[in-house]
Amino acid sequence: MSWKVIIFLILTVLLVIFTVQNQLLLNIKFIHWEMKDVPVVYVLLFGLIFGFLLSMMIQLPTIMRLRRELRKVVHELEDSETIEPAKDEEVDSEGGVSMGKDYKGGFFNE
Image (cartoon, rainbow, N blue to C red; front, side):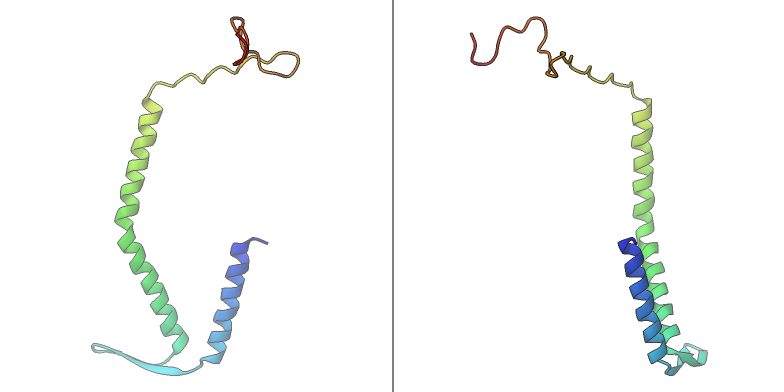
C-alpha cells in the first residue's frame, strides 16, 4: 500500500473519531444571516475547505505564469535545431573501449 493511501486512511479515521466525539451544536450568526444547531464538525470542515480554496486562489496567478513560461520553453526547444547526439565510442572485442587508431600509448608511456 502506498504511503499516501496510509496517511489518507489515518486522517479519515481521525476525522471520524473527531466527528463522533464532538456532537456539540452551535448557533452561527453572520451579519443578518443566522443558522441554528449547526454541528461543530461542519463549521470546522467549512473553514478548512474555505482556507484551502483561498490559498489556491492566491497561488493561481503564480501557477498560471509558470505554466506559460514552461510552454514557452518547450516551444523554443521544439523549434530549435536538434543537436545530434555524440557517437558512442567504439568497443573492441575484449570488452574495453577503443582509444582510436592514432592512440600511441597511455599517460605514463612516451
